[in-house]
Image (cartoon, rainbow, N blue to C red):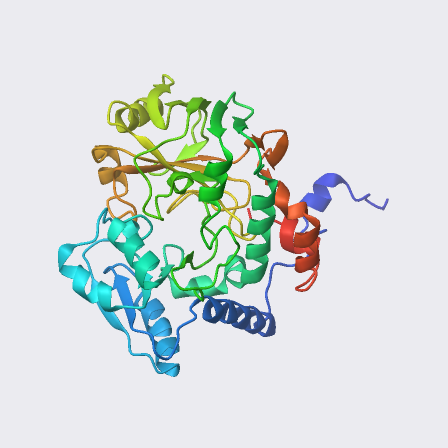
Length: 401
C-alpha cells in the first residue's frame, strides 16, 4: 500500500500536532508566581506600626482581600477598622463616615469617590493620609494572574518614561487618531503638564510609602494622560477649569455593552463635554441618551501601564493595558440603561468608560501611543529596568489577549 503523505487536513485533525508550547502550568511555577504577586502586594501596602488603618468597603468585595490586608497590618502592629457602605457607587463621602476617616493615617478603599472627593483630597494634602484604591483587587485570586506578579517598580519606570514624552517648555496639541476616523485635539500649556504630573503616581511612585499618596492595587489603572489634575483638582486650586478641546473619537466598546460596537459611534467633544453622539445604530442611540444633554464631562482620559493586564478587558473601569484608552465621562443624571445592565457596577451610573484599543496619540511632534502601543515600553530606561526581572521583550511586549 502506498504511503499516505501528511496532508494539511491530516495535520489539522491530529490530536497531538502542535507548534506552540503547552499552556499547562506546573505547581512549582504557580507557587513561584504566587509569591512574586504577594511580594508586590506587600510592597504596595506599606503599612507602618503606628498607622491607624481603615478599610472603606462594600458587601460585594471578596472578604479574603480584607483578611489578607488585615493580616499584613497585624503583623506590623497596626489594628485596622472597617467602615462598610451598601455600594461602591459613592460620588461623595457619607457624612456619617467622616469622623472615622479623619482619624485614619492609612486608608484602603473600594469607593468610587476615593480619588476626587474634596474631603479626601484635603486629608491627603493636609494630614498626609496614604490611600490605596482596590478597584482592581476585589478578588484575592487575582494574585494568581500575570498582572498581579508584574513588578510594581517596573510599572513605575514605564510611567516615568511616559511622562518624559510630554513637552514641558511650550504649548502643544494632544491629538487622537484611529482607523475609524477619530480626530480630537486637546490644547495643552506647560502649567497643565506640571499640574498633571504633580501626583505621586506620575512620578512612578506606586507604593503607599509617601505621605499624602494615592495609589492603586493592582497597579494597572492610570495615572490618566489627561484629567482635571491639570488644573490642580487634587491640590485644592481647581476652579472648574477645563482644557480647550474639540473633535470626535470613535470608541470600539463601552461599559454595559455585551459586545464591541459593530457600527461606528462617534463621541463629539467641545471643551470637555460630549456635545453629540454620531451613529444610527441602537447602540449609538443608547450612548446618545446616556451622554447628550446631561453635561457629560470628560472626567478622565485613562491609560494603563501594566503590560500583563488583559488587553481587551474593559470592565470594570476601562481597559488598562498599555496604549488602550478609556474616555471616562460623568453626566448630571444616572443612565437608566446602565442601571439595568450593570446594576452592581463598581462605578456610579453617571459614569461611562468608552474604550479605544487602537488610537495614535501625539503630544506636539512626539508620539505617545502608536496604534494602541504605548511608546514608553521601548524607552531605554524601561528596557534596562525590565532586564532586572527577566527578558524585556517577554515582559513588555508579550501581551495577554
